[in-house]
Image 1 (cartoon, rainbow, N blue to C red):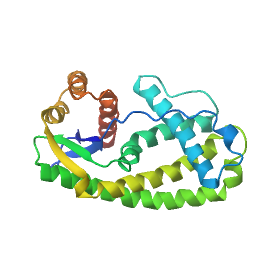
Image 2: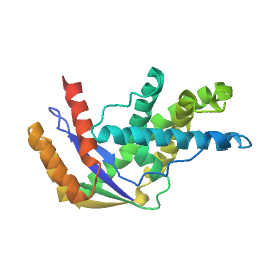
Image 3: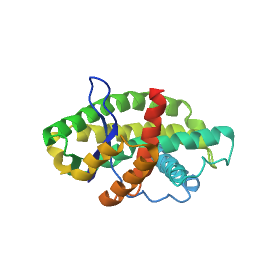
Amino acid sequence: MDVFLLPVGSAKPGGEPQFQTYCEPPPDPVPDGVEGHAQGRSFFGRMADGFRKAMAEGEAEERRQEDGHAPSESGSRSTRFIKRRLAAAVAEQRLLWHLRHATAARLHHPTTMTSAQALEMAIAECKKDFAKHRLWCIIDTVIVVAQTPLAFVPGPNFVAYYFIFRAVGHFFSMRGAQKGMNAALWTTHPSGPLSDLQQALTLEPSARTERIAAIAATLGLARLAAFMRRVVDRSVILRV
């Protein structure tokens, strides 16, 4: 599994540049007919079905927005809100979900840091993620249990799918983060293009967009440009 330590923000005065781990695993297959197979399934089987359904919705909505389309306007206001939240959760937790199955992971990092620094940074991020997702897994599991009768009624139910997705997703993220805390999982690989990406963040918006697209092509990361656009735009908003 290839994981990239991306520079996502310039250094603050007296501080260090900001980095974030990132990967592009292939999308999971979209499940068919989840609602029609609920009868006879165990509680945890139905939880898994609901998770796969919600993840497919989140993947579809995330790809819509990455392709430059406005957020989906179909369905009720609550359904549209949930779809946006699903898309954000998929983008945030995808790496950890896939990391839980990994037997080895190669960490690509900018040449401006040592392999030891990069590994320390990745493990520290996993430790922080483990604590966060453990807490939210407990909270969302309690919510799912409380609304179980609503969760498994026939027909699409985005509210129920959302809370099932959160509970299962946080559990998977916790498992992935736990595995990522093991230094033996990782090997490191210095990457010149990632150093170029760090420099690209200092450019004007138009030049930055063009440079990031070129770096993404070099690294073979089809969704990197959309990810960086989202992260950089958010960091600009937070600085204002």
